[in-house]
Image (cartoon, rainbow over all chains, first blue to last red; front, side):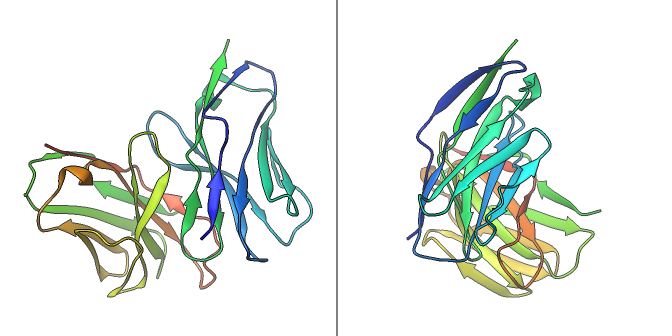
Length: 112
Length: 114
């Protein structure tokens, strides 16, 4: 079974600073996708960024980028120039089939 | 553009009562549909998914069931709720025969079983 581990239950960052959220996963598959979702207080899950395992280039979406290390099975999210609106729960997710396997999440606090 | 609706937004039900949560998707055809549950302080757990009308796959054995009576409608049901059924229920959709595509989530239903 695939598992996704987020070892940081909570993280804090100052506005305009950079923060990195960690994620590791366990799989025997060679073809899969990885995602970061954001869940603000409204609790709606919002896709932040995705990474295809066969692509070596790290995905980037504006202030959000990932560091994908396939051999190490690591998939961290970097948020640059943090904004107050970035405060939320962040979930790492793995997909090799229909199911998304989620980590337990990291709560990100952004301080002014 | 595609939108996904869920209702009700909040529900409080007594133990042993029935349940029906509804999810509908607009702006796309033949989507893959999913029901997830999020317990307090936890990530999401996939309950059911459907790749077409009348096609339901169950990921977790429980007293819940799902149905897909129409292409863009997905219903989560229970005949008798348990206390452990409390949680936040999210419906999601994706498109494409390849299941690797990202999933898009609805606003969710908060269910409290008393």
